[in-house]
Length: 289
Image (cartoon, rainbow, N blue to C red; front, top):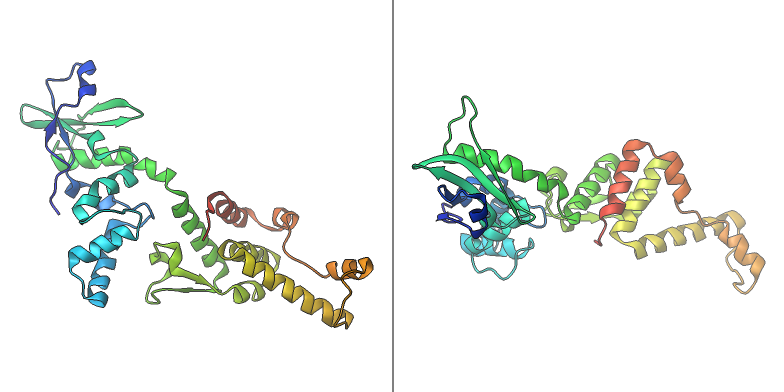
């Protein structure tokens, strides 16, 4: 993949800087592809591996497989992978592919430039022992642009929180395809939760609290129904009753005392800092599952 983001340019916003003597170049895709990520958080490297599997399973060409990967990872309405590259750059760095690159004087590279919040920034490079090649300067530019990934989409942060929670709990989930391990999962929909196993195989209060929180994220309705059903069964067994008059206030109150689901106060008091951090990230980044 040797496509260029493009050739030498002189963007209009550079005129005010008085630097029109320098030639401004946009960056080559081939020099940044190792850090590109899809809107879902899938890396380009993993996308290529997934495409190879798709080629085998569906008898697709590589081009068709890559197009399917793009469509399934937040880059739609593209007919080829090359069409997706500008959007990959935007999802990785938070700026357009036309808003960063290198500049040169007298046929040699002398630094790099990028635009953020409508303002151009420039860096002239003069570091002992560092050769001002196109590759080296692009690498230095990427280091300055990548911090935007710390502000990655919420679905990516949510996936990391879910994975951390599952690593802590160590049970109650399966992966699809099964040959993957949890560290290789790049999409939240590759994780299936067994709510009953997740909740009722809990050991200790903190374990149960996190299990309940994660199960609720996965499927709130099924989690609620399961918890209520289990509470009813427990109450029926302890009181040795099989019928209840819901019109009777006393019987309703007696039944209600049997319901027990993890409470907010429990979470505040019984989780340690690491467990609270997982719960906090689940809450902050949850947008449905």
